[in-house]
Image (tube, rainbow, N blue to C red; front, side):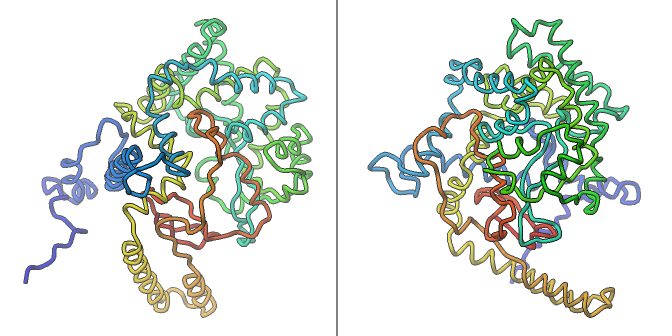
Length: 474
């Protein structure tokens, strides 16, 4: 009988030329790293990304089939309908670089630029910022969403967090070793503004405007929590209603108008809000109240084109890639268009695409085998919880076992039906409001833990949070 190879332990992955006493990581991984160089279109490489690229090839084949099938693998005898039709149209629109170049950026951006101009007026500011999310799915200054209440996990509440920066986090504005990146960032802002409107943003004006925008971000960044501070569950739990939030910021920003403009019918419908970063929210509200109209418009125009750059003509895509992927991350090459179009499709119509993916590649037999594996892991963990010596209190052990028993296992795709809007208005590749604070619809609502946090074609794993208590493997 031939012994079965243990694929989890391969001596070829080791580098025996290195002493484990000198560098244990390179000793255990050097062989794998040498055999798997980083592809030029990625900033790093690992087995997860390897799986991801394999999955992308499968999705590409599935999307190609939509031209000749009905979306379920059967030969097409009539035009595509429903979800398959929308996915096909959207993906093809994303692939059509010629059409994107021909269409340019002025007309597609016109509604957003008009919204930026309107937000310059202080009396309109709160409403316009809220409408940005509802109309275009774009958020500025504040990070707004919905998630379970950390002290009442049966309910979701609105979450208000720090935002407003163009660099990855506050450290980029202050660390000495990031000075060159700060300089490159200001140059990038100027370049993008010139691409937006070379008549208004001449070289001199773009440079001056870039410094002005950077100054606003620097001011905000000083109030932001660090990555470590954001992990503090007590410091990031500050539950209050809209009136208390407004008072917290000394009435400097109209949060009631801002939040209702995002999609809620009234302040009462919003309910309580968890303010995750108190000092940052206070500072951002203060900054917002002090910006003059011209500066506000400059700031919003920059952040708008930055957020939607991947949907614009090639000059915007290339400039955005150069700074955010090459300068900041070291990526050498832009991903091919089909991968970028696929990512757009997955973002916009991920539930529909995931459903088709599971129908083709993940049948009930695969799902049952996956469930069996997860259940065996859960059973082993349950046995371990019964035996671990450091858990001395019976009440603690009982609580741990209860939590383990209540874990929700979600594999494959959502069991609920997928609703896709009728008509083709959602096929516009740029700026679709698929998300926004319509998510405040979860506010104070009983949390349905049957929902997934990934789409079915995503090669990911989610072990949940202390409030979710779930294992998700799409």
